[in-house]
Amino acid sequence: MATYPSRNGLAIPPQELCLPYVESDRPPDNHHLYWPAKQFGRSAILWTFRGLEANQEMMEWGTHHEYVHRRWTNAPRPKIEVAYNFIMEQLDMGEEISSKALRSIRREYERRK
Image (tube, rainbow, N blue to C red; front, top):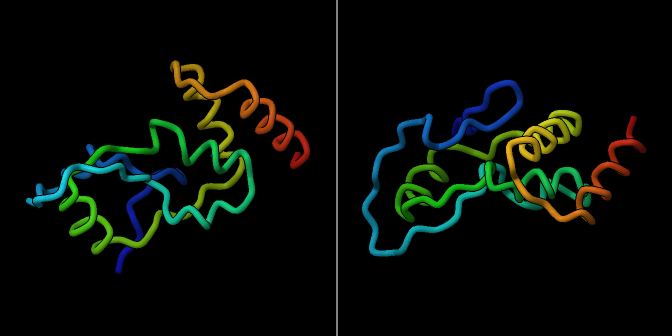
């Protein structure tokens, strides 16, 4: 099985992959571009990164489960610096995260330097 497509260390959004529509009787659900959750450990940076709106997509259930998860293994977890910079870019673009989360990721980033 191939790895989920990525570019410059970041997963490619589903819209860019021209995914097929796979019919299902089930309702659409949320797809995290980075899975499984356990690969993110206890890092505030990585958990914030995974939870960003930009890294989640509502998808048809069939496309999500019958195509994406059967065709690809998870995208590699990004390096901390890549994840941190992506969070900062998303904040500049209007993404909202709590001030508590922002303090936590900034402290963690400073400790890792």
